[in-house]
Each structure stands twice: as structure tokens, then as C-alpha cells.
Amino acid sequence: MNDRLIIFDTTLRDGEQSPGASMNLAEKLQVAHALKDLGVDVIEAGFPIASPGDFEAVQAIAREVRGPVICGLARCNAADIDRAGEALRDCPRRRIHVFLATSAIHRQFKLKMAKEEIIRRSIDGIKRARQYTEDVEFSPEDAARTELDFLVEVVEAAIDAGATTVNIPDTVGYAVPSQYAATIAHLKKHVRNIDKAIISVHCHDDLGMAVANSLAAVMEGARQVECTINGIGERAGNCALEEVVMAVRTRQDYFQLTTNINTKKLYPTSRLVSHVTGIQVQRNKAIVGQNAFAHEAGIHQDGLLKERTTYEIMNPEDIGVPQTELVLGKHSGRHALRQRVLDLGYHLTEEQLQKVFDGFKALADRKKVIYDADVEALAEAQIHSGPALWTLEAVSCNAGSATIPSAAVCLWHQDGTIVRQASLGDGPVDAVFKAIEHITGIEVKLRDYRVRSVTVGEDAQGEAHIEAEYNGRIINGRAVSTDIIEASALAFLQVINRIALRMAAEQRIHSTEAPPREPAAAS
Image (cartoon, rainbow, N blue to C red; front, side, top):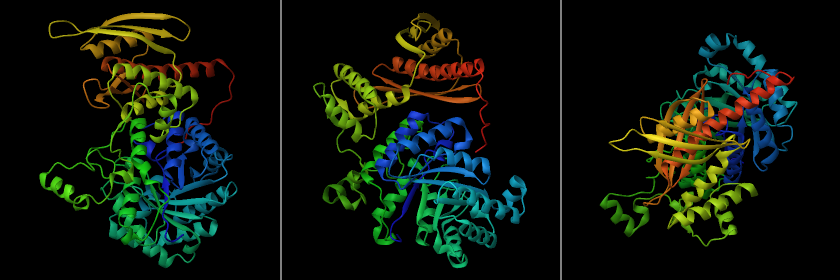
């Protein structure tokens, strides 16, 4: 066990807390299956008491995803822990992760608790969690800013109470590697029962040192790293899973550790999470960025041609970077497409796969070349689509330097009604959006609108990404088409449908005598 590093992935919990990165149930299940295929040891699926949606997601993942330990987060109080226990009840390998802040600033201003009360509550929370599972993790929140003597006292009490993993979080990314490593070393030296628990680390990237801090702690004996795909998370994000894993693999001579991660799945999983959350990976991002294996300088290119290792310390194939994307043609069959969809990390139902196949055949008639990214886009469209009250039947627009931009939109409602509307706008896309708003009666505030090419060439598909605000909530939409106006209309309609479906659900609840839902807790 001492030579293996446990990878605890919190993309679905801490990662989803990135502004604008919320995922629906279908998207969370897709990511959870991808994380299982990647080989992560623990999946922190969510914070069950935070909302009914979080509870439903944790429960669904706990029921469907087999292999990794499925974990639910809870504060050290009875309601949180009971809710987590209920969500994880059907999972054979489950963990409850309880936490309580310990730093002086949190004790004084947030909790208004004395040290003795914090220790008592921590013990009570761990013992209650043990009623649901023997696998209990405890985190003294803001441990990196907690007095070392008190941190020793809390960790020792937590292990005595039954915690099998103790996590030492740098909650606000305040630590530096030497200091953080010294904290782990101090705990190993002064916590008398430390050998009875696994030491875990959870680092944020506010000062850009989350990965460095995590690896420094590993060198002092930490054997679990909590991380996220692409490093997404609160504020500046979390420790990036792909960076930790490849550092340990590439410098095995230094770390003397291994992981269970199938590194060939790193790049596909990164792409999946990027598509689902709408958070694009920066070009120069380590390991999975577009430029990570790109070489433009002549000296570098010359060196690579003579010997790859002159300028590359990793093989791109080792992380799943495709050497060629050209894989399918118009005569390819359903079986070949199914395999390619699986290879790209997507788990679709038969109905979804059939829709992807139909879309693939239609696209093959419009494009000369089909790339992996085209297949990804079709699969993503099925993940994002979900049920719809409104469907786009047709869209056309008129724009130019000497004319007023206008658009005509035709929508089909699920009750069979077809509605047409024309509108003017500041541009063709604005006119399309206004026409859709007029038909559906739902107006939103557009926060972000992006269009990019999915692949290359004149016939490439365009991807439109919409971020809109409605009643204080952020809703995302994404769609692809060889016509960027159509892609924009589909993405905007996806946002409208999500709002319309939520409104319809709320109306049903208000019209029936449903029992009141438990109020959401702040995360």
C-alpha cells in the first residue's frame, strides 16, 4: 500500500463548484462512468444535502457505477450525515466524507466555536457516519492555516473516533510546498495513532501551487491526493488530476509510487469534462492542453526529429492524445461508430446511440472528412439534449452591411403546436434569439456567447456555447452544426428548454399536495 498513491477525484463535487460549471444528472453520470474507466480509486459524487439534485446525482452514481469507492460529502451534523448515508445506501463500496473547520479565523468568524466544541462535534460526526459505513474520511477544513498543536489534537481524536482517512486540506490555497510538507511531517511525528489512517491532501490553486503542494506532501507520506480533471474547482481551482498522475509516472525514479490510473484515458476524459462543463482547457495547460505536445521552434523540431526525448519527456500516446483523428467515413457502420464512441469515453443508451448514428450519417453527406471531434460533438449533443418542450424546425436569417438584420424561426411544441416568429436584432444571432424568446415567452440575460470550430476545414462543424442568467441562476447550452446560426439557435433553445422544464415541474409541485422538500444547505 505504501508504494501506491490513491487518486480521489472530486470533479463532480468541488469541480462542479466552479462558476458556471454545473452539470445535470445525465452529464454527471457520463463523467462518473468516464472516471471509473480512467481508474480513479474514489469518486466524490457530490454534497447530498446541498440540494435535491445533488442528492439524486449521488444516489444515481452510487447505484450505477461499480468499481471505485463512491463518496458523499457532509458537514459534521446529523442532518448532513444522514442525508449522505441515504444517498449512498445502495452502493457496496461507499464512503462518507465529513468536515469541520479548525483554523482560528474560521473558529472565530464562521463557526464561533471553541476548540473543545470543534473536537466534540468532529468526534460525534465521525461516529454517526460510522453507522452507515466503516469507510469514513475526516477533513479539518482550512488545516493549512490551523495551529499545528491543535491540528494534531483534532486529527488524533478523529482517528480514535473511527476515521480511516484524514484529509489535510489547504482550503484557500495559502500554503507553499515546504510549509505544507512540514505540516504532514509534523502530523506523522506527533499524532500517536497516525498509522491507523491514510493521510490525504486536498489543495487549492489560489497561488498556483496546488500540484506542487500535493506532491510535496506525498514525499512526506501522504498516500491519497484529492484532485479534479483539468484542475477545475472553486475560485482558481484544485490540484489537477492529470498533472499529479503524470508527474508520478514520469518521475517514478523520484517518487517511487504508482497509481491505478489508465493514463491513455486522461486526454479523452479531459475533453469530456471540458465539453460538459463548458470550461475550455487553456492551450498551454500541462498534460492535456492543445500545445502540450506542440513544437514550433526550429531547434526543438530538429531535436525531435533526431531523438524525441530531446524535447518531450512524455509520449503523447501515453495520455491518449490521438496521432490522427481521421477514423470514420460515410460507409462506416453502426458497430464501428459504437466502438469509437466508447473509445472516446462516452456511455450512451441505445436510443442515444441511434440518434448519434443518424446524425453521423447526415453529417457524412455534408462533410468530406469525419474527425473524432465530430463524433464527440454528436455524442455531446445527446448528453446535453435531455427532454425538450420546444424543438427547432427551421431558422433563417438576413444580414449584411446595407440591411437590418432579421431572422425567422419556426419551433415545434411537444403538444403538437407549430409556432413561427420573425424578429429584428443587432445581428443575425441576436435576431434569432429574440424570435425564440418571443415564441416561448421566456427572456434571459445573455452572459456569454462563444462559437468555435470543432474540427478543421471549410466544412467543419461549428460549436456554439451559451451562458445565460434567469432568475439569478446560470444555465448553459451547447450545440453543434455545420451552420453556426443553426448551432447558435439550438444552443439557445437548449437553455430555454431547461428553464421551461423547470417552470413546468414547479407548477406541477404547486398544483399537487406534495410533501415539502428539505431546504438546501449552503456548501
